[in-house]
Length: 628
Image (cartoon, rainbow, N blue to C red):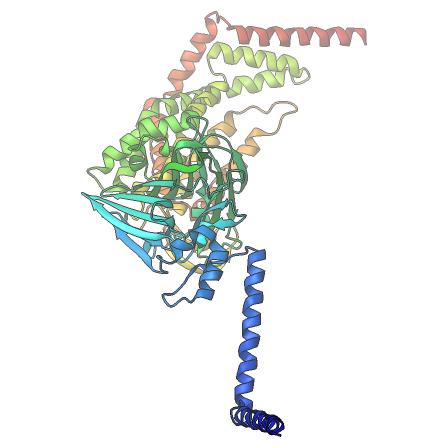
């Protein structure tokens, strides 16, 4: 009975305990709101776990993933490690802030994300609208190293967080940007900025990364820039904007538009007419690719950028590490400045090739620099033009003398042509004999013009490239390196523009009167050859066409160049008038010609060969007529 009672009591106790537990569970059950919150938390946990799983499978990165705030939780740390691997250490020490340093010439801003220059201002220059000259600003440039890691990641330094530090060493400012794996393992960009220097020492080196960087994959340095417009005429500025490079130990070349593959490169420069951005190396680059694209689609539309530039350079590992010593040049395309570095950077100034470049470098550049040292640059152009014309005046004298002789001989030449009008070969033979005896060959007038051609072309290259003319005023001209404006047009004329420049008009008028003086005499003296174009008529067309061409062509060119042509043609007109009215005596020249005709004239080899050929041709013609 006692055992049965215990059993009944036990059962009753269990029932009571169960009832109490059931009541407590019912009393503490979650509300509908709490159930909803639990369900939401559970769903977020599942999504987070799935996201982590996906990130472990694909290593697609972007810049936002590399920034971690001070309140990062463990999940964010997991994500960061999945994105960056060993370089997650650097993200914990870096910020999104910028690093700013200055010298007396340059104001530089470095982006801590990527470690590259995000702003470069040239402190001593402004553009045509008095705005400071920026080579880099507002993301118009990027600098990136693309490399693979041993844990199968492809990383781009332009998106990775660098740790900055700035130190001073005398007048040298050192900026170190480190992409860290640890305090003793990192990839470093090191910049050294010196006072009074546009050249920045730049080094890329890694330390302790031989086990992290994948040496079997290509490591490429990519440098891109969109050139800001700095000049009043964007079409004129674009004409002198291109990629230059030094290759094969001193050879220089450029790419104006398109792509080039280059071997053994010492430097690559993005030249923007009067300012340049140049990347130089101490150990020459191999297999470099450069690309240029014109961004000006319509010249009548105000455009921010001129051209875009891109360069890809493969980097080589040394003992599993990167170690590349380089330099940046951000500064003026000024021959005097560039030449001081003794690294062939003066090739950025387009003085012309061969003889033309030699004339500019060793004659016109020193002469213009000397004159500009003690007189206004506009006056220096006038004086330099006078000196050049005086130096070449003997050439003009020879040219005009030859023309005068041909004019004096014209009646006799007409008589020969009339006498042998049915025998053109005989007429040419006697014409050549008369000209040879009188010393009045038409070629004698061409040779002096050929002598002047190198000087003419050299100066055509010199004035648009003379940095000293930039923003220098003269008379009504505000900037001798750009076009002058006396009137703005409410419309655009194709090939001419929407403005009127006075110096091209004056130069066109001067060249018209110069050609009238010289061409008019040539038209009178030039004989009409059988089967040949009418040279007189062609010269007449040229007398009107050349000034019109100059008027249109030079309306957008540097006013300093138009000033040179105006003064040059004025002086040429003066020289011709002096020679014609005070030096040359046609009666005296006629008497000299008659004396020469009496003297036996010894023919040179060329003249003798031509005479023999014409004589043989005449004999063949006579033989053919006899057979007929």
